[in-house]
Length: 164
Image (tube, rainbow, N blue to C red):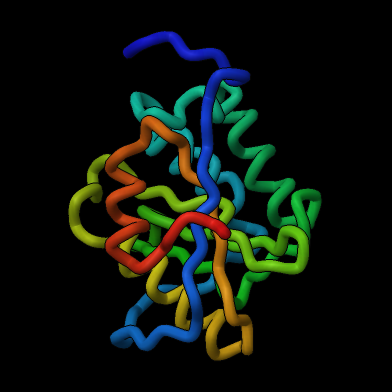
């Protein structure tokens, strides 16, 4: 892995128009009691990825970021548009949505390495898009790191386009 400073990390804002229809899913909405498990999950998911530098270097810092999202520090948290995928009663993937500058923001999407490549991230984002559309939101935004080509391909395949 190359060493890139946080200041040099380039991110792109992508948007998608809503509503979007999606198949039924078995996801649940996150609750405050999930914060420690989601912190561990996000830590595991981001290690070794182009977004690793965003973790703050520890499970404690990532868990605090999740807590800040839940408490609205980064804009109001939208639990009814956020989802958690469980496997045997433990979270294995999540999509967390906040509101930034009056637009829903897909703040975090992460999947346990043991469950990567199964379409959970895609299905969670689709569930989020559907929920937001049902709630009357016309747009969903996200920020993606320049070097995270896997995430960028996923977002583009879901219809996200560069912010205009």
